[in-house]
Length: 495
Image 1 (tube, rainbow, N blue to C red):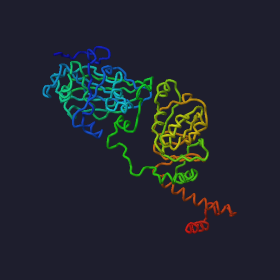
Image 2 (tube, rainbow, N blue to C red):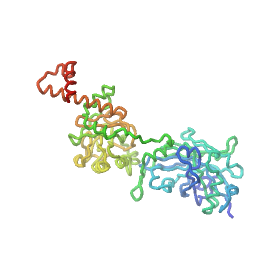
Image 3 (cartoon, rainbow, N blue to C red):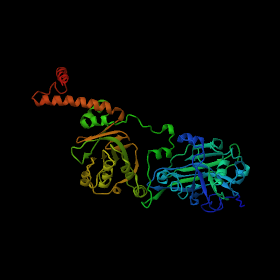
Image 4 (cartoon, helix red, strand yellow):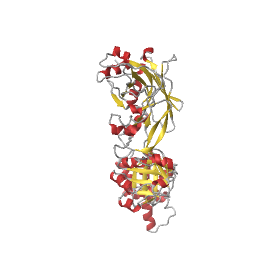
């Protein structure tokens, strides 16, 4: 029976191991704190494999591929098998472990949907399993007394002990040995506690495994996140992000995840009211309530006479910088992801900083948004293929046509964040209404009140216009003085 001895770090790409492991097996969900965060507690452990090429060393880097956004760390305790294990009992399992060390089980949530649970691509990237820097002799520690801690840029973000595990470490070894032979050098990643979240290029993640109150430690495993310059191509599944993946990647607790309301912010009844309400009237009602900075300035409709009403989905462009466009502009970038995920009745609002010197969308993206049922697009930048976009029938409010491609002025950066469009702040979920007079942003909580007040005022203005059209003077009529108010209300009652 082979043996594996704990040694000092050696071998490029092997972390603290002599050679890359034959197998890396990772546990899906193992800490009670993480299970509570996810809102589900497994009855038994489940596993996935990671390639040995994912091993990294302390002081190395991990790359976030171009066109992706959700690279998350997971500080973990790693077990290194030292003696061949097959059909071992739990009370004998620890005898087959040679060493314990720190691990970081990086994962790219942008690819989880494509993997459907296997994690082959989402967790298999080169360097996605840094180990080390040192090994703790398993014979010298009690497996129930270990601690794992993680820091991001010097801030402690994860801390838990093996007392917080749903399943003891011995169980993983015994369970896996029922299904296949564990061989010397194989690595078991034993899961992460609560606190895992998204990291960005430039962040430094540090993981340590130790025994509290003693000098026993793996040492601190340092990994720096870098920005990749290559994007995934369409030879396979492309990155895809939705609200669920964002919530899990960022570590949103289950109880804090968005809950669908039985009464959506924009019901069909409210939508119908806003379709009837002129933007000028809505603007006046917003102003009466102290909201003066809710108009998206400088944009005109490509289809005169069109009306848009919908909830905002947002896209932010930053000024073009060649290295950033190389990393964020190609592949399945933020712009494409938003136009591929816009829902029925939603309005895409684009922050282009008022820069009309290039297009911010063209006919292909307009066709996609139209097919998915988008209510329209508002951009304070330019539009390519202007006539072709108009022919799609999708209402687009913009600064007008421009033939240049996106990369002349912009880098598509992120989606569903607060943006500044035409001088107005727009949040995801804000209600957008546009017509030939322009576009306004309505806070959802005020929308019903604003719509009702606008329609009341519109009826009054229509009656006043009729009086003026019949030759009556404006004085006292616009706005209504008490006498004319009494006449108007009497007319209303008759109606």
